[in-house]
Amino acid sequence: MKITTTTYTKALKDIRARIAKGYARLEETFRRETLATNWDVGRIITERILPDSTDAPSAQNAQVIEDLVSDLGRGRTFIYRLVKFYKCYPRRPKTSLTWSHYTYLSIVEDEHTRDAFEQKAIKQGLSAKNLYRLIAKKKKKEKSATVRRLLAGRQAKQVKNFKLPVTRGELYFYKCVRRDYIPCKKNERLVDIGFKAG
Image (cartoon, rainbow, N blue to C red):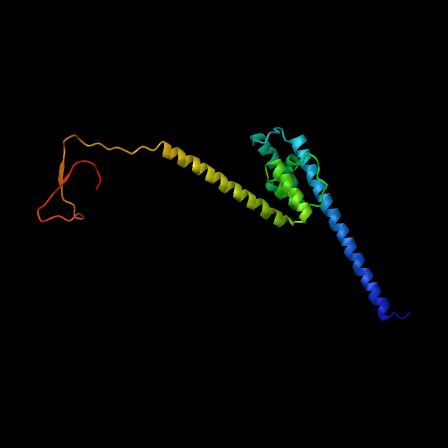
């Protein structure tokens, strides 16, 4: 059977479309399963393994994390991210965002701000990298605003509480001095009356 150029071209087009569709489904499945797995593992660690469920670090929690690092062969940062992800999202997110997106979203402490970033990333189709840039920019603005507020408060307090330092010498005690940087006639002396201005 002889294959015509038209038949081959059409078949090639269909093959490429099928491969692209399969890879897209594979990527979507991988994204969804990664998110679900990481959320579930974060939940198990938080609810069943960590003895101290408060946000404050404790020696017991640190030891449990070290044990998990050793037993799972995963990094400490990864384990902490799983726990943080679950604490930030007690309900598993079902969005188009990736694990990388949620890693960055989990560093946003305020829930409303985090939700706003999440919605923006979904609506605008932001990559994880671009989402991180937005979060970092907002954190930088907040930090500089906080620093300005603290400095303004500190400066106002300093101005309000400012007192001119007073250094008193002995009463009626004067020194006869010669200063090379003050022009004087030959054999002329200056009298230092104790104000320490020079």
